[in-house]
Length: 388
Image (cartoon, rainbow, N blue to C red; front, side):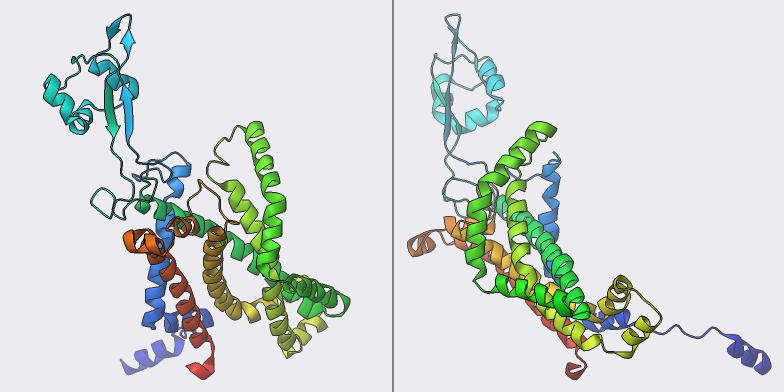
């Protein structure tokens, strides 16, 4: 028994060492703040992603975020000298007779129970929708309504969709593709290429980004809209502008073109500290080409700092989109955005009378910003050995 055990132990496969990624992930999941932040991001971004079903014609069960719940009245018609029946009226306007009875108790009291065969005098005005402007939170409208009667719960979820699109695409394009790519290339190659990239970055960072954004939006917004209108006519995809795709493309392109400079400078600094390491010199000695060295050797070295920067950039971009839209140079109506919701909330007087109008977007934007920043801090703690 002992010999067999010794033989088994001798030939047993050695335990596979834990990879740095799994070790870091395990350490991150042991931080309560990180877990809560991940859950908040997952829930809010998941809710925003759910509304993408609407773009494909799938019923989400949410009210149209652009629909105004204002009072609506229609009159019965006279056809061939005879007033139409209530059944014909309801079929013509696609409304339920039970709803008509509920909204028009005076008619029911005057003409008796309303049925499809009920005939009302010609040009009788019938209420089809009550005015629901500035309604506080209720069972019908969970987050209340705004000044035009739009449901704030639906607008919040569709505004999350805008946040998902802007933050994910802009950060991946600006920080990862352009910023990280140029930072790696500039730091490793050096020389004139490094000088050219850094001088271009200095030019971008020389003025406040808001000034650049105002100029870009002012110059290209109408052109981008015309391009998408022509695209709709040529392809038959008449939903592009209605879904705000033209706004998304313009804002993503503008923020990406401006956001890469700071990221490229940061990653260049990291590469400068790595390019003289022995493993880089060894790769150069055996004839490895620049693309291979950038992808296989330098990229893994800066990847941990990219993860930290990615989390911070997501939070910054989410806040920037809200501010830009609030200033009137971001997402335009009718595309829902937290920026337009904040702008519609009005001033101090409106805040005291209708506090839910500002409270609702704040309850979404603030957790997103806090979650990304706290997650970035937790990742920094895990990656920095001095803070472990």
